[in-house]
Amino acid sequence: MQDPTSLQLAHQRLGVTMLYMGDLLLAEEQLTQEVVDYELERERSSIRLYGQAPSSMQDMWLGQVKWLLGYPDQASKHLQEALGIAKEVAHPFTHAFVLSLSFTFYYRSEAMQELNECLDTVFPLAEEQNFRMFSVQASLFQGYLWTKSGKIPEGIDAIIKAMEFLKRMGSQISRPYNLSNLAEAQGLAGEPDQGLATVEQALAHVKETDEHYTEADILRVKGDLLLLSAESDNRAEECYRQSLDVARSQSAKSWELRTSLSLARLWQKQGKQTEARGLLAEIYGWFTEGFDTPDLIDAKALLEELS
Image (cartoon, rainbow, N blue to C red):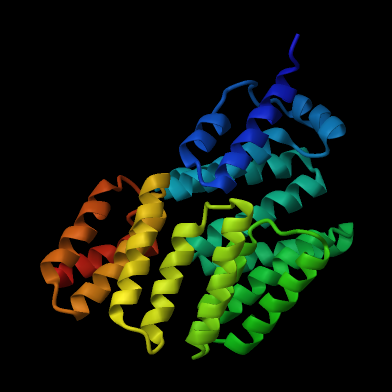
């Protein structure tokens, strides 16, 4: 008879693989398979066999997918459930792993206070348990946090050092996304041409590895950087359109919203009010939750400007 926990983990592994490849709907399908109900003792037994708490990890990965698909409130709910299970099973590796994955959720959601609190938990935990990977991940997101709070040179330095360390460790997962965030920081530092070179590295890595789940956002960042450089608006618009094509092919509504904001702002500047409003109204009208999140707040404000 098939062990239910092994089956749960098989669905989880396939779901995570599909997530990174950008097949978000299949990832969601795999990560919502109800194989076993959560029970504390079963979870602890699974830890002894598999080294982590499967239900906690399942909720965390599903939360990542839900955010990309455009359900930020559901994503937050799964995140909190994952953290709750991780605390209940009292397994340091699971707790550190779930916290490190929550960095991404908080950063994408622009929840900087929550991200900072999470970092404050992970740094001592990783030091105590000698979890070097999680310590480096925390340093990476500390760099992102610094760039958003005005400490741009310190942030860029921290990002580069963390990425170099991850590369030496043989960890290349999420490298395109990390390069994209570095490029964005370089743009904030007044170096858009350097940022564009970094973006090209990110896109090359996407092509090489088939890690497509952040491709749409990388293309958005490229468009934003082109507007900061001496390039024409037409090249930026082309990148935004490519980003929208990728986001729509993946059903990545959160990326679609973010790129639509950038393109609508460009069109607003060019006097294309009707086109800007039509683009933004369509994606804004799709959402059914998360209206207190920064992207949707910004979209509502811009729509009011365009009225």
